Length: 250
Image (cartoon, rainbow, N blue to C red; front, top):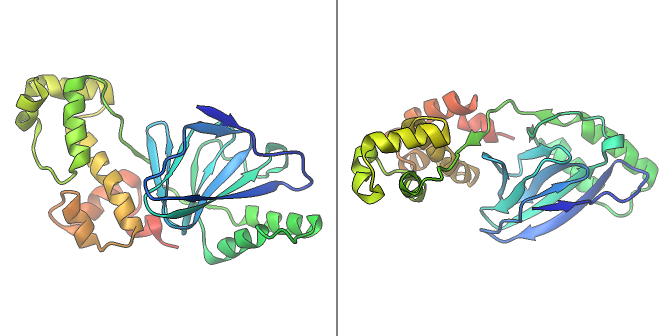
């Protein structure tokens, strides 16, 4: 893990950075001295904070408070915009990572703040509006804790490799080298949930990049193991708190 300080002394509250991330790239775990708004101007951004996971198309960003250890990656060719806010000059006080809606006005304002020609006064005025436009999206982050025991880990890796795999724990006993009861106990002890509930989270996490790419619900539900789009939407809403459309809607 690295600690990255990106906020030199300045007269305004924000500093913006940009990075091109090829598909499949993951930056190492790190933290920042200031708050960060992680946003993909183009492409699809992924952010992990511990076991929590977010996928962000350009219509969504993630507010990451100062000192929160995280890692950032790209599921497609992505332009990462890091908007960093000095703690002592930032009016936002959200204590935990928060999903934010990036509507057209905020997007244009963030692009405007990236201009090198702005005077300090103009930048401060634009920053004040940008902070006002940060609109939280009330969702529950998807969490997929991984077991440490190799027997349960064999099952977890198989499900992640193929979320549509419909096998139950009894079908994994030979490959895992453990009984169904032992595997069930390991998931409860190490993942703090039943295998069935864990698999739902794994499937929903697998759905996020597919949804962000704009795949139809029918295709997404089929690829992650749901019999119908309606069954997938019900599971998504029950776990996340909103429908897939509301999660990504601009």
